[in-house]
Amino acid sequence: MTNSLYAILLALAFALAAGLVGSFALMRRMLLASDVISHLALPGLGLAFLLKINPLVGGGATLFVGTLIVWKLEQASGLATEAAIGVVFAAALAIGAAVTPKEDLIEALFGGFQPLSLGGLISGLAAAAFVIFFVFRFRDRLALSFFSADLAASAGINVRRLNLYFLLIFSLTVIAELRFMGALLASALLIVPAATGRQLTNNFSRFLWVSSAVSVVAVGGGYTLDKLFMKGALPGPAVGIVAAVLFGLSILKRAAK
Image (cartoon, rainbow, N blue to C red; front, top):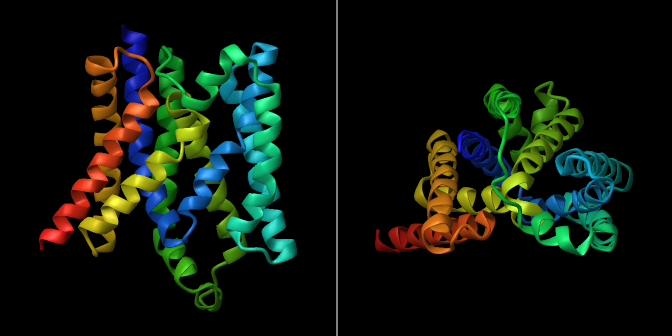
């Protein structure tokens, strides 16, 4: 019971981080690309299941390698981020589906709240804290570079390096979400809360916090929905459902103004 509680606490911590990262992904116009990035973990997940090692190790390895390939393609070919990710995505998805054992495919795609040790909780919370620290440490530079790369460069910001840092932080957030959301739904806490926050406020600082709050509520509400009505089947879909409902409510609230 305690280990399951650790898993839920870590999921809530990374939901907070995902709301922040997703807000900047929305500003960079790469929210849909985030859905594709999460699929880059599939080959590693499949190999990890085959080799009987921690799936997050395998998924994280291919996700980071794929992120670096995307960044290199973006720099070398001049492709937009979405196009560069799309080139890598097709191969990653095909390889992942081919190597993942059938009995482990559902978990790889949709995740689960697997029990977590105290050590895992501490290291996970440290990673979540690092993501949150990065976002607030570089928030102004990120916002400026996403608004105008030329203006950011003239202000002395190394835009190329900052983009790489953001992609790596983005990937770290996705890796954490793989554990309880799976490869197919890992991007849900990056896309939906940010879109919801954008509907509810035009203030930049408030937008960051609203997106994070929506993400946390989606995870908490999804876990409750899964336990009470879905009989503990899979938490990922339940979290996605709650997030979508919150987005729908934000649309209604905006329309009512």
